[in-house]
Image 1 (cartoon, rainbow, N blue to C red):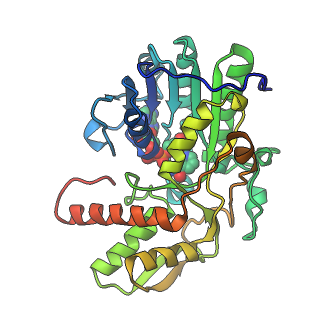
Image 2 (image 1 turned 135 degrees about the vertical axis):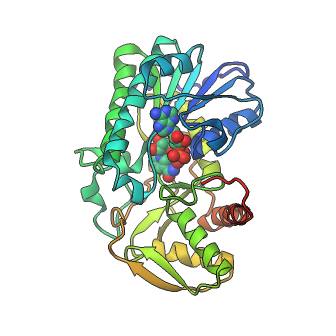
Length: 346
Ligand code: NAD
């Protein structure tokens, strides 16, 4: 499907307009900062959340509060864009995506209107944030899961709701390239974590939730921690700085047009191991209680990085321990700020 002939890197000019949907959230907010720090002067960031609730607002970035599931807002958002990054979606950790499948499915409206608006606006490139949840769940029932390679999405049996939306939106991206010549890029993220992400309130993912629980236990002198599931489920986790760098590299690689690719760490750990690392960082040892009725997702999931290594000669390489140290410190600051009655990222 993609034309593999042109392998040269694209040149994005420093004053070209970059549009980022979902920039009030974790990855979109970090991406806006990433481009700003690299000297790009025209970045338009959009999110449906009111501006005071954005996780990060980078000075010099145009920040707009708009609902991107509405077509006219997408037209306004993409006006003049050279590159469009769609990170907007109604999403969260397992607790959210297992309970709110309709909300997850409705994110298809965002991508449908954003890609059409990007194409109509004459944007040169379009990025879609897909997910490992697009993979066939039948391949993830084993704790000793083999890492998922890009072709494992088909035959399709994606995660109900969230995963199917991602798979359909990927297909939109592929067909906009085939039928209309819009260069689209699709990364399947595997669990992203780091500072400036959701850390409480029900949408947070395992690394942030465990950091918060350990910090809370220390602060309140509690000796136990509740873990969702039996703790044996395995995952890989990618640090946010690897994610933003990977998005940039994927979006500017001609060999990856309309070609879904894994963007994740291949360091596989059990949730029990994740808890042990966080306990070591926090300097505590807690008694583990397992909530077997809580949502726990597939048994095991890892990222097969052979394709990204081959094409980009790179893969996410921040160790979980190093990334968690930074994340733990940031969540601790947030926790203490909230306790002191100050405004925080939730
Ligand atoms: P996030 O929830 O922090 O950010 C998503 C943002 O999109 C939120 O700020 C939300 O308000 C915004 N949004 C939702 N609906 C919108 C709408 N109609 N109009 C405008 N904005 C809207 O999530 P994130 O972790 O930053 O994820 C970004 C993208 O990456 C999402 O597409 C997500 O599915 C994908 N992804 C994330 C992970 C991860 O581990 N964080 C893993 C796989 C895929």
